[in-house]
Amino acid sequence: MLEKTNLKVSFIGAGKVGAAMAILLNRQGYKVVSVYDQDADAANALSAQIKGCRPTASSQQAADAADLIFITTPDGVIPQIAAEVNWRRGQGVVHCSGADSTAILEPARKVGTTVAAFHPLQTFAGAKEAMENMPGSTFSIEAEEPLLSTLKKMAADLGGNWITLKAEDKAAYHAAAVFASNYLVTLVKMSADLWQTFSIPSGQAVKALLPLLKGTIHNIETIGLPGCLSGPIARGDAGTVEKHLKTIQSKTPQILSTYKELGRQTVPIAIAKGTINQEQARQLDLLLTGK
Ligand SMILES: NC(=O)c1ccc[n+]([C@@H]2O[C@H](COP(=O)([O-])OP(=O)(O)OC[C@H]3O[C@@H](n4cnc5c(N)ncnc54)[C@H](OP(=O)(O)O)[C@@H]3O)[C@@H](O)[C@H]2O)c1
Image (cartoon, rainbow, N blue to C red; front, top):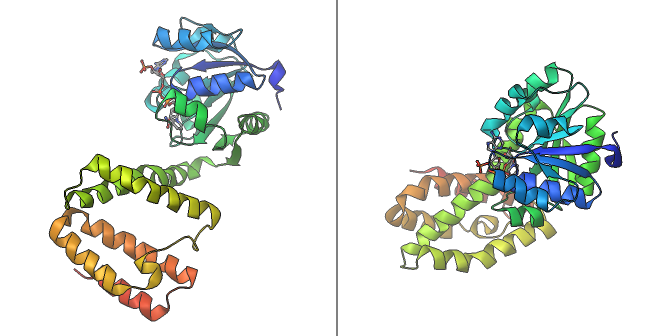
């Protein structure tokens, strides 16, 4: 493992993730020596917050200054950076994409660097949120030693946990993140659409739904699956589900198929919780499968 006090770290990309990671790592004693961004103002603003860090005029200069380089640009730009920089044998080159494996760093690997992917399993709407939410997050790491041990330590220093991933598992891992984060947003939007049928605008609906969302997350956290499931399917209340289907069909037919599919996915959770029996499950499935 490369010790943090001997390790010079650079960032190419001073956006949400790059900035938060650079500042938080520096607070933990890592030497963040340089930062490059195509937006010079972003690089200047970030380096001004880190003692001993200087903005550079090119990605090459940022790379030259460090032993470990994080490419924290948008995903689509990472292969270009990996290909255009003249890397030094022995450097570590890391990207933070959740969807891509280390394969996109192949040009760097070919010249003798050690490559890795280091993905914070978190959603960052802005730089401030990234600083706040990165600690406590799980980092998924695809790497070989000695970089693997360095990044595990880094995840711990960032206040997070870590898992290791193989390249072939990245797509499934990222799809899971989409379910838990992006599609939750979609579900809130669908829920707010239903509120509009009784004339409550989306913003007000979301405000009213937030305590429910937070309560649900709290139950997931404290009780876990499957015990945290509540509602008509958990109770085996087919009559209520039937009413939902009728009203959605007439008022918001565009979300009927999603309601049915999620309902079918919810039935096995209720069985696992032990609050419905196989006959109740069969009846619910029949309702939720019907046209
Ligand atoms: N945001 C999240 O929720 C999140 C969560 C986990 C992981 N990640 C990953 O973290 C990485 C960075 O994402 P982010 O959200 O921090 O993106 P971001 O906020 O958009 O920051 C990317 C930065 O890179 C700069 N940039 C673009 N092209 C460049 C180039 N050719 N050379 C140098 N700098 C360049 C951008 O400048 P401009 O503004 O001028 O384009 C911007 O300052 C991505 O791999 C992403 O998948 C993001």
